Image (cartoon, rainbow, N blue to C red; front, side, top):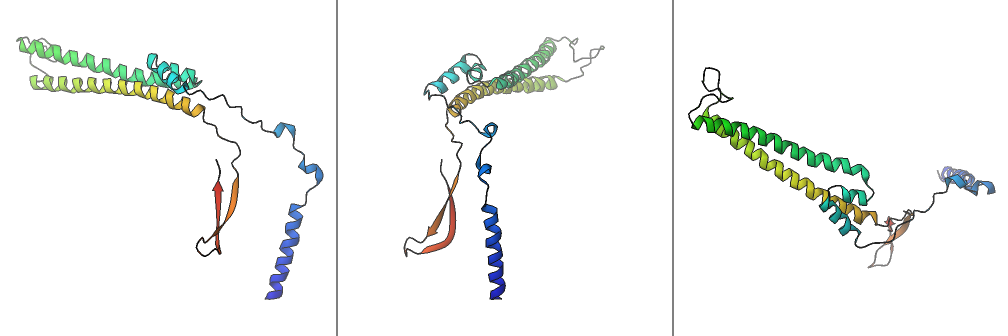
Length: 195
């Protein structure tokens, strides 16, 4: 058993030494493969506040300031969706409100009545429809305000992260674990990230 283990160990050592042998020319690096170090811009502490201010003045302007032009259509689509639903709900609210006022005045020729004057939608139905569309108008306003605030927050956070310096060197350094009380080495191995 011991001889088999010795032969296996000898074989692995010979095989492993062949893996580490390199020709001298193989250490040369192709100039096209060299990755240039990323040039970081100088830190500007007012950049996030400036980007947020620009987005507050005109939605999307902060994203342009951060050179994130692809976000501008998303900002306007989000705001435009809220505005569209506000006007759509407002138009429907006005329709039901007008029909309700005509019913209170005793007229039966509103758009929710048949040609003979019988109501297709009851008066209580008109009241409920008004409440429904009024609530949807208010929700649409909240969506618009929320998207406007999200636009400002996005510009501010993006300006903060644009200046965040991340090293391209993400190496792992092994460290032997030991018991601090007894001073003896343990059987664990830890890998530490250094940022």
